[in-house]
Length: 145
Image (cartoon, rainbow, N blue to C red):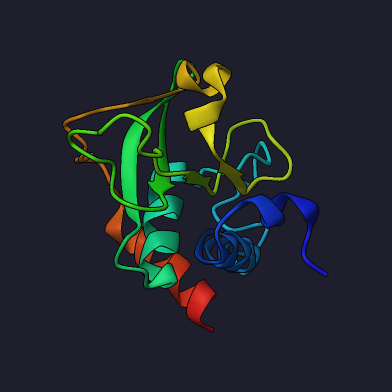
């Protein structure tokens, strides 16, 4: 049975969401856990990139920006249009590590919900320079095993 929320997304977006949930669940819960304070140092920036690679979908792309006041990275379900004709839907956000949220992986269609407009702010000049490539590779190892 398909969860009710997936009935309102395209079959492709539903598959992306379900696959992302599976991929994130492959990461051990204690991965990058600091033994002193029990806090994980895993960042959304590396996790979003690893999931995006593992999805193997040429239409998805990672976006860097902010979630409220925190630097954050997420995945667009298709490229964000440079110029958008009226009534052209925006891509959905596949957020694999939404801060302070359970479930952790969420699929958001904010094109019809104005509250999300101010929650996710994307950086037009996307591209972080502090990505730990080794962590991305380790995450991909978990996801592909």
